[in-house]
Length: 223
Ligand code: AMP
Image 1: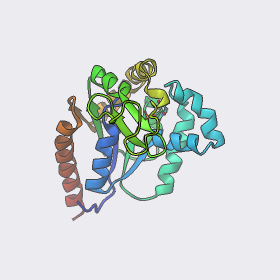
Image 2 (image 1 turned 120 degrees about the vertical axis):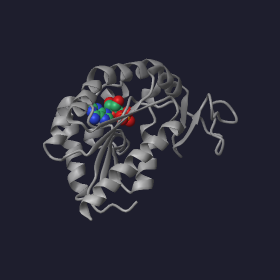
Image 3 (image 1 turned 90 degrees about the vertical axis):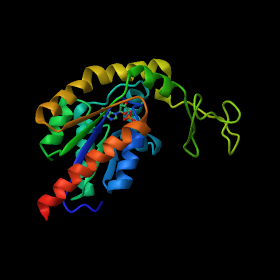
Image 4 (image 1 turned 120 degrees about the horizontal axis):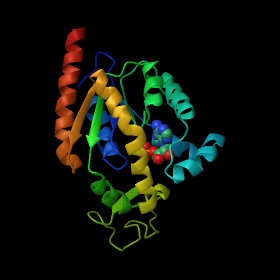
């Protein structure tokens, strides 16, 4: 769908709720620019920037980086991409971050993926990655041909530092205490749209239908 007017959306949900997959589908179908705070932080860590080195230990331990630091980082990324429609993923994660975002932009829609914590724990702790290529396996439903080895290169697979069972539990706890108030914040503003389920493929058609509806409305207002 061609966008005639700027549309700003946030996608929320616990780590491992399928935000990455749904975001990729939204950007493909609707042409929004996708900004993921986790990806931006990981890019800093991989590039070994001073900022990345400073933040690495909190991230590896599943702790949130400070509000003022992440808010400044994301607002400057949004400024850099300029006047375009976007989808924010992983930010805001606290009410203070949501207020920082609000002070600069009006958010049109917040998509909330509501997936049970047990489903997430099972998913994340069985996720293994081939680091050089980024190929991802899941020991339950997409296992490598040889356990622990990449199908293409035969090289070893690793777990993301923050996908171990202890860290996943900590990340979910952080979500519960710090991020659920953000859902309340957006609910009170009337922009929260919640999608519940255990499978991304079943949640997706409802997300897609909602966005078609919202974007048609926004385009009609322009026409
Ligand atoms: P994610 O890939 O979104 O799960 O992010 C990975 C890690 O980056 C999180 O566990 C946090 O340590 C950090 N992080 C990402 N986004 C934020 C944010 N909005 N506020 C604070 N920390 C964040």
